[in-house]
Length: 233
Image: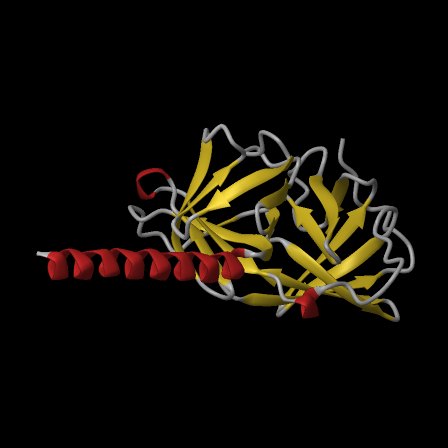
């Protein structure tokens, strides 16, 4: 009887220690800066994945989240506070009213379960190599040709929140945009586009990377003056 109880007690201690180690390892994987890549639903067969324009930093028991303030899904574009994490669930602050269920977590990818398999969110961990390596990159008041593969367009940053695009003149008054700097990362959020990380500027070209289902390379080539042919009433 005593041997059986001793073995049972040892197993409980072993499981407790193992769970603690796994939890610590999971917290190490969670720590860092993550950016939203895309969302998907288990019950939809469509290959389209909706971009997520959110950046969040986890630092032990604290978090800071910033989302695109012009996103229709954004209720509060800046959130920060305390969290607890047990390897399977992130509970924000102490009221336990908000939590995220982790579907999977590894060194570079985090998937958060949506309600009943809808709007599952995929985040990508940002490596330090993706930080902006240039200073004083200005966008407002300037015009750029944007290139990604064979896709080419002209973007006119007419204010600190509005872009006029040559390819989409139907959006009135234009396309909303926001630039967010967090932990050395320089992010460009635009309506109808994937999150873009500003990498560096060489001569008249700004190099960016978009994070989606895979990494997409972009270039912003500065035009000498803003075209006067694009007008939105």
